[in-house]
Length: 102
Image (cartoon, rainbow, N blue to C red; front, side, top):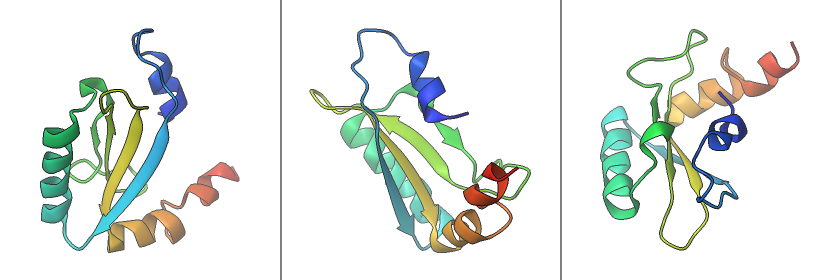
């Protein structure tokens, strides 16, 4: 589901100007460890968390997605994946440009 649609469902008192950050690490374990650190430090929107590592999409896409809302700041979408997951997402069967072409 696109971030824009997901964010549209959030409560109106949250000011949303989403910014995205993608972080690449070496292992799946590091993905989860980093996610835990990010959630602990910045908090997160419970409804905006997707674990595509434990439950990959049908096209093989794997990544962790979360949205953090640091105090007095805009929402930030964070994607965490390994270098191999990123290579598949950018150039393999899960490449965004491949399914956008229809």
